[in-house]
Image (cartoon, rainbow, N blue to C red; front, side, top):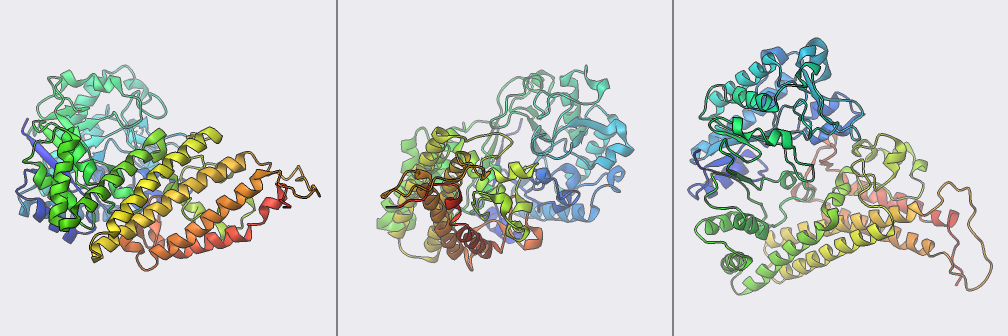
Length: 580
């Protein structure tokens, strides 16, 4: 297998993509990922009541680039043409800089239900998450010859028109799924006739179809993802692989030939371009240089230290964290001169912050700031009392809640209770606070550097990130308080006339948490006013979705604070008021 070192980075535009390609050419990289296509809002427009598809709208499915004639009446061909032109433009830019294009996606990917109503034999596995979707989604069956022929022809056109020779597919997640795989969210399922078929025949048949007889194309399929249970049945199929095929990182001899640090979160995190140079170096430290296929995430920032560090790292032996910090020190001296130690410490503190935020799954909880819209929804004890106007800008963009009762629960994040009760809330808030402390320390170090526009913008990004972490803390604390409050109003709060009276600590907790989030919302609105598009992943109001905020966020934050102030006296309905 020919060695490949594949770079992925987030680029805001084709011109931005070109500038990075020019910087990384002749640095040992062979490929660059070209598949960060525009989000497919049409998927959600099929049924706006079902937010599940937001997980997959940003993926680059094969049929999102090349539409088989058999699917032309079911898929938005104009959007497909636009996505293909997007990819072809990036492929040309890559080639101009001596780089080959690579595509990362999830396959086999769901198709609109009408496809399977008209072609029942094409219906494969149910691939959605039953606690996050309002109705089933199905991927095309890999046991069906007609489906495989569509993949063969689509990839043939893709390769001919773009020169792509590396495709990496994640599956059993984000709207993709393999027939009868144990890794499906709903459990093994598929066409009844295929239940007893060898998984090896099914998986290798799909990889063969993608290659279409062209063994120069490397195709990789991965089912083992993050916190999910490993898919042993698919993983055990590696002995059947053919040339230039990879399955769960293994080749046909059982050797691990792929190491992957590609991170979808870099393109989906709400605050853009947060510096992460130590993450890059640690990934390189743990990625053997002789690994045949390496997919490497290069984090972007205003200072673009990631690109420079990659150039240094490719000729350096990185065997320990000490080596990482030597490279950071060298880079910092070039960028900040005598203030280099402050820059190194800032990078170190940012890495320390990220480690704290990974504790006990807190990094998963933080996603609630975005996809549960903690960021702009009011925290009130009786959210069911909010008017339609007071819910209008956040409730339609709240992920996964299938009932209004679920929607009102701030900690119903992924159809599971990640945090519930005092102990869990305490631990999560403490981890977040440690992350914030390190983040604040990094901001202090950046303030010591020369006050250039890039440094000022970096500080602004970090301040916004701190506000988001504060929002997460407040959401966790508020729901824990609400869980031990009788919000039905059936029990009248005590009205003791004794003096002094400070019997119910919940009244003071409510005031502290609520005031903290009100002030935090105003602070975040001020930080973002006039800089929203530069700082955060956002779009015009008509294209807002679960993972992409509206450019109107600053005004929404102020309205959130006003609604919370309107409900600031609600605690007297449920708690004994102080009299001290």
